[in-house]
Length: 133
Image 1: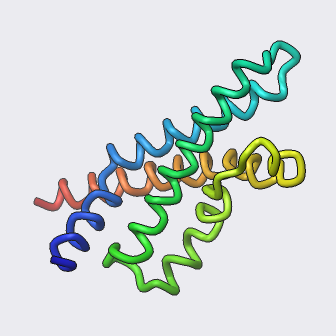
Image 2 (image 1 turned 60 degrees about the horizontal axis):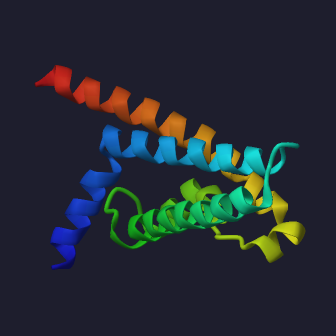
């Protein structure tokens, strides 16, 4: 069972479409965060954006732990070294914690850059493997 799950997670996390989806989620999360800082932010909309942001953070957290425990490309130590920023930026932050820990939510912008680079290099690797066949 674990080997089938490991194979699935490894293939999933190496898929360019999956990586692109994670980049889109990171951009959405960054957009939600940016909206909260605008002068036009209404409290009722901010409450919705916070819930969406927590949902996105949970998706990133699930992705991180799936990769940590089931991705066979890296050892756990290598995975931590490569993805520690993803872990920190995926910590869900509630509105009360946000005042004290705004920096954790702002780190999600770095996830956008990291994810975009992952998509670029994964696609490049995929195309080089495809051209060898």
